[in-house]
Length: 308
Length: 308
Image 1 (cartoon, rainbow over the protein chains, first blue to last red):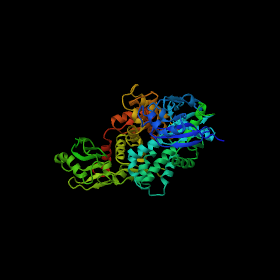
Image 2: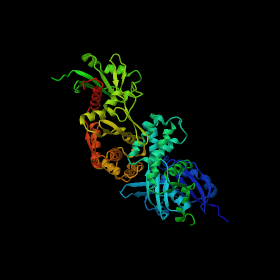
Image 3: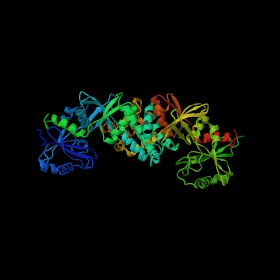
Image 4: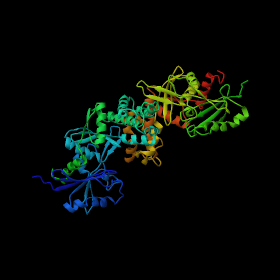
């Protein structure tokens, strides 16, 4: 018989999001608390009370259960800093660099570190939270390769022998948002599109494929205005063009010549990137849901918080 | 003896700027009115009264003098639309596509068109005002080649046989501004730099030189955050890094393999681009001041408004 009694509380605690899962000894999810305050929307001293309040029902039902957390909760501006661990970093290195936030009422909270990387030119990069999701996708998928986590700051990581050996951040989502909201490009992006839905996205991807020099992106983005001026696209399609251009450029740069990668994202973003990748020759396979919890379980096993 | 009596009023009327010059038959500038309201800060019907008021003293002193204007004053949202003329476009084509705004009290105002370009892939681009500056620089410099007008929307144009045959717009200045003001990058850019002044700019130029894929720019921009996180640069130097990265990428893309170009800009921006170009192997030579007026004089000669 399977022992389905709660063995671990898994907290995925990002900048503006909070999700907690109750996990059994075998790593199966028994219950979930999908709502709470983001780690950076709380002030110093507010994290422990907030977590205690969120977990109160589980505590009443199951007593003290070991707690593990990852994401911005471990940033300098979070609850307790868990300094970045350098690449190459797998579950063992992440476990070794974790810290314990003293929380007497909760029995202490294990907080996982972020991961840092220095490229060949000495330029630094960081992730915090994504490394745990990659470890989770890796545990589920069981294969080295390239992993992408699209979003405001997309991450493309290379995994070898179970460890993250290199990664790059792309400001794709944020560049799209600031250009749409604050630049001259946004003015014509209001309202519905004229053509078939998705035409703009496809044209943006084609534009990305045609870029030759790195600076060409600064030019091709301006086409989100001139296509509108010339009546070739309008409204939402211009925004779709810009999105396709930026996502396409990111994929062609991030995939580093590989023709496949695992994508870890919400269903909407996964579909968007899968479509883009297919058009650009990069096959993107979706990772399972709850990668953060899956990764935390891997680390918890290394730490003896769960049976290996 | 030179006839120094006023023969032309030259109005450089951009989105948010207004400058007027009194020119003699030989093209020499006799007087200047460097202040006035931008063409897009005036409503429909306000352009003629504003110009009449600005030119009142010259009118009183010299009577009716032919008036020529270029820039956003000829946009759809300006005074009177002078539709874009397609590349290749030189002084003859610009003259032929100019329009006359009926302004009885002023004797009519000749407004020059912008120039449009369709690249080999059918993507459209536009300029309005810059074409006249290029014609002016060309008249002064007398040589075909590449011309760059840095700014919010930088233009790189190729001139052959006295005509603009191709050009590209780069959103360099606007991308810098929106990232600095509205993205996560701006938070650490306040305050003075730690290192020697200009170190950040030089490092940004080196980063631009190291870009391999078009999407790499979305990654290298994020370094304006991570260099700060790792204490390698701070404050203004992070902004300088981002500026150098974007300007460097623009130059390497815009110069199209050429090793020299003429730069048309304010002294500050000219110095910035000349420094960047020198580091990246593109020799930028400053154009004379008042290129807009020099270009208008060329067009005015074609139109018989000044002796050829």
